[in-house]
Amino acid sequence: MRSSLIPLTKILFIEGAIDFGGSVKSLLMLLKHLDKSKYLPIVVCLYDVPYLNKLKDTGVEVRVLKGAGTLLFTRLSHILQLMRLIKKLDISLLHLNNGIYYPAVIAACLCRVPCVSHFRSLPYNIFTEKPTIPFLTLLFGKFSSHNIAISEAVKNRYVELGFKKEKISVIPDGIEIDAIRKNASIPRPAMYKTNGAFIIGSVCRLSEEKGLNYLIDAIPIILKEIKNIKCVLVGDGPLMKQLKTQVNNLGLSETVIFAGHQDNPYPILSEFDIFVLPSLREGLPISIMEAMALGMPVVASKVGGVSELVSNMINGILVSSGDIEQIANSVISLYKDSNLRRQLAHSAYIKAKESFAFQKTIQHVELKYAELIKGNG
Image (cartoon, rainbow, N blue to C red; front, side, top):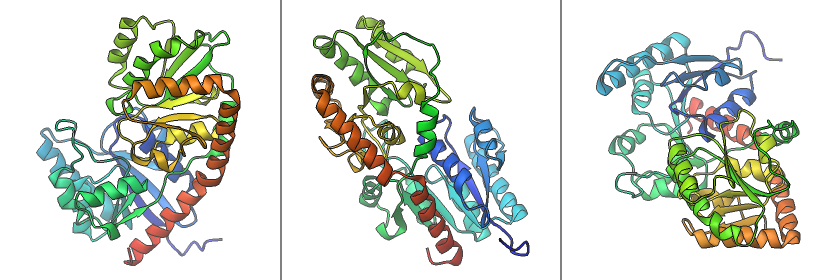
């Protein structure tokens, strides 16, 4: 038992995500499973976001930073607010859960507290459509004590763009496999009828980088071979309206089902015959891990850290990003070959059990905390 005379090490998490997604799922896992005999986590969100209650349900203290009008004054205000919190709460380390937020890095430096930034996606400029890092991110990245990348692909990209490789550790995200399988056993909400259809689909944020428009474009090809098929898309996001318009224009409203955001998506996910994620960019998609944990074959784009999860024709099928024909042919081949489908599904589950357990992630994160706080990171 920990002596009451030994204070807990306080970790201040900074979360900047607007929507509930992989980064927030990972944060929730850390909040739930960090060793509470050693660490006291506290969360600061940059915005008043819809998932605040999910964070509070873990029992940790959650705060929201206040804005100050213009972007510049908001950033300056955030520096001051964070400095006050660091001193008032006696924070030992800042963990930036969504990459480098430079006001937090500045506050940590001024308070002489170590700061670790978590890189969860491949750097990408949506305007130039090139893998670039914003100048301020690159500049203040030099002042971050250390960085964590969720995959080798993410680390390599940051190193290529100017970060020192010795300042980036790879710690893959993990998942709660037993909890996922337990939640999957709950009856799914009566939202739609499948009528014995072959079900493909995805669980993800409906955003440009997920490439769901390519999956929808592949469905007319798939329908030529599989008449009774449903494509279920679970999630919400900025492309919801655009994707629904695409579905209607292709005459697929009876085939494609938009299930929206689900607090517990696993009962729906568990009914899929194939999980499809045709992403354009990925760090290390938790949704693929979750599908594999439910013993499901995966068809996914070979981008970012996906190939660190999926081995082609061993526990899934990898396709070229944006290749509609490959997506369609992969789904059709798995539909026609039930033995291959079962083989990939079994291998996917074994891979998940052996490699995706959250305990490994927690162990490596806590070791990095200890190194940084002692000044050896």
